[in-house]
Structures are given as structure tokens and as C-alpha cells.
Amino acid sequence: MDPVPYYPVNEFGPLMKGLVIGGVGILHVFLAQFAIGGGMLLYAFERRAQRGDADARAFVDGYFRILVLVSFVIGALTGVAMWFTTIQVGARTIGLMVDEFHWLWATEWVWFSVEVCAGYAFYRFGSRLDDRARRRLLGLYAFAAWMSLFWINGILSWQLTPGGWLDGHGMWSGFFNPTFWPSLLFRTAVATTLAALAACVVINTMDLPRDRKLALIRSAAMFAVPIAAMPLFALWFLAAIPEDSRSWLLGGSMPMTMFVAVAAGASALIGGYVIVGILMKKLTMNIATATLLLALAFGATAAGEFVREGARKPFTIRGALYSTSLTPAEVAQLRKTGATTHDPYPLRDEARYPNPQLVRGAKVHRVLCDACHTLHGSNALVELVRTWTDDQLRLNIAKLQRTKGFMPPFAGTADDVEALVQLLKWEVAGTPATWPLSADPTVTTQVSRWLDEVGTSPMGGR
Image 1 (cartoon, rainbow, N blue to C red):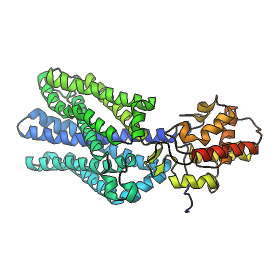
Image 2 (cartoon, rainbow, N blue to C red; image 1 turned 90 degrees about the vertical axis):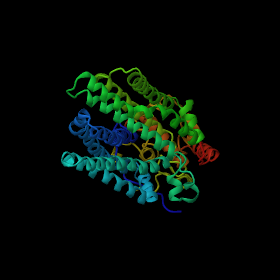
Image 3 (cartoon, one colour; image 1 turned 60 degrees about the vertical axis):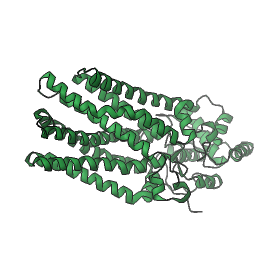
Image 4 (cartoon, rainbow, N blue to C red; image 1 turned 180 degrees about the horizontal axis):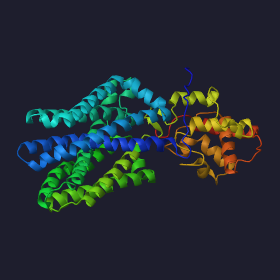
């Protein structure tokens, strides 16, 4: 078999890698989706302005175009930050995505380039253009922004539901996967809602009489109406994802279920206020309320992205690549050769470990654990296992996919298991200056038996 690839990794102290890339990703997704919806709203207000609405003209020329410019500039910067952090956290995942979809990703980049150029051109020259040219330029901006979403959505949804790609690695069968359409429609509704809420914030800063502000707010609020269809898109998405992932979201994993509830609850509050309060009851919306609703939308976005990421576990690409950046075949291979046998990278702090077994345990942790855990910070292993007995540690690590169904199988030998156990015991004990080697052959035999019993298949199957 081909050798298992190892990548140099950065450590982020008490922050686990998932939090680092998650924090960057949430901000990027929020800004990018707002820029997409903002383009649509900007086009609609421009048409209103050309029908003689001077307030809509002031909104387009003096306020919202700057907000959109800021959003897609910062969105572009956070997009670069996403690439920068991803290649440090999940180089193999992003590599496989680029390998499989490089032409489609290039297509997305072309549309994004068109979006940026059109938006910047309107920002610089919009006031000098006639009405027809302004509409065309804003229409191009709005369409290019949505097309960027179209292409990136297919690649991201493929991670959770590769569909027919698993059998033949066909590019289009992977792109138009089972969650492609519900994800695309859901994100489009999110984008228009974010644009509506941001517009309401901006309108409240304009120096206009109350009734004229309210007229603009109601026009902007129309862009939040698609939020009413989001529950249908969410149910469609849930029906399309794998059964085990669906069960975790619907009660099998309480943290996941709580984030689903946060996203759904925040969306319901936003939709209820905008649709019932603003559009049906003709209530006004001051800047404090608009800002609060926009903050709720950010919270819903963050919760939704957490759910999307968590639903893939134990994979980063369902059925193809585990969260440990190993393929299922490589897990079986490392069960024979050991997780760290061919790891070429030394430990940064190797001198702190009292014996070679702990050094090996630290390398096992780096290869198999630290994508989702730290030792003492976020999701800390030391705190998770502090009260476990020695045999409980060995059994739970050896049968990892049965310990937690969203964990990948342990990809190492019985000696790797024992090295990790000793590392965790040493850390729990406060890292004393000396630590005995664990070399009981009966322990190794028992751990080997447990590894053989559980096998190398994930609990969730494909």
C-alpha cells in the first residue's frame, strides 16, 4: 500500500484546531452570505430609485453600497484566512476537495472575481452611469454573487453527502449530491434575510422623517420573507443526510441538538418579528431592534455552521476521509504498522517527557486526537478521562468508535493505545519528573483483543 501521508501541524495552545477554523469560518460565511443577499437588495432598491423614489436613491448611493463593499472586502479577506487556517488544520481534506473539484472551484473563483469587479465598479463609477448601465452593473453583481454561492455550495455539501461519488468518483455526481438543493435554497434564504436586517440598521441611521424611514424598512423587510420557507428547507436537508447524522441532530447528541435549537429559535424570532410585526402589523423598527435581530442572525449562522460541521463526524468527507485525515483503508493499515512509525516530525517539547513511551503517546495524540481535542484546553482529554480507571481508558480508546459513535476508529496498535493511556495518566498526575514504563504483556494482549473485536469500520457506516 502507499505510505500514509503526514503533514506538519501548528498548535494553537488551549484552542483546539476546530475552534480556530470554526471562528474564522463563521465570520466568513456570515459576511459572504450577507454580501450575496446585499447584492439582490441593492438591485431591487436601484429599480425603486429609478421609478422616482429619492430616498431609495439616497440609500443606494450613500449607504448600502458602502456596506456591501465592506462586506465583500472583509469577506474576501476572511476567505483567504480560511485557506490559510485550513491548510494548517486539515491540509489533506482541502487537498482532496481541490483534487476532486479543481475546475468547479476555479469556476467559483471566476464568479467571485466578477462579483468583486462589478461591486467595485459600481462603488467608483455608479454615480456617473445612466440608469440602464447602473441596473445592468448591479444585476451582474447580484447574479455573480449568487453564482459564487451556487458553486461553493455543491463542494461543501459534498463533504456530508458525497452520494454517487463514493462509488465512481464522478465529479458531477459528487457536486449535485443529495443535500445540494436544500442547502442552496436554505443559504439563499439566509442571505436575503441578512441583507434585510442589515438594511434596516442602515436605514435607521439616515436623516429622514419617521414615515419615510418606515417605508424603506418595509421594502427592505420584504427580503426577509424567504425565512418563512427555511423550516421546509431544513426538513428537506434532514431527510437527505445519513441516518446516524440525523439522529445526533435530533437528540442523539445533546450539544448538537442544542445548537439546532439555537439556530431554529433565533430564526423563528427573526422571522416572527419581521413578517408579523413589520409587514403584517405595520410596526416600526428602531436601530436597537434591528441591531439585536442582526446579532440573533449571527448567532443562528454560528449555530448552523456548527451543526453542518458536526453532522459529518467522524468524517471530514463522509465515507472517504476521517477527522483524523486518514482514509478507512489507512486506519486498517496503521492497525498493523502503528500510528507514528513513519511520522517524520519531532515533538516541539520532547525533552519534557520522562520516557520514550510518553513521547510515543504524545505523537499518537498529535496524529489521532488533536484535530478535535487538546490536553488541557478546549475539549480537553485530561478532563474527559480524569476519573477513568486504567482498564476503562484502554477499553474506551481501543473501541473508540463504540465509545462515541461520532469518533473514528483508533488507527494504531495495542502499543499505541498503551502509550496514549500512559500519556493521559501522566498528565492527570500533574506531569511528574519520573514515570515508569508500562510493559505488561497481558495488557498488550488484552488491548489487541479489543482492537480485533471492534474492527476498523465506523459505527455510522458510510
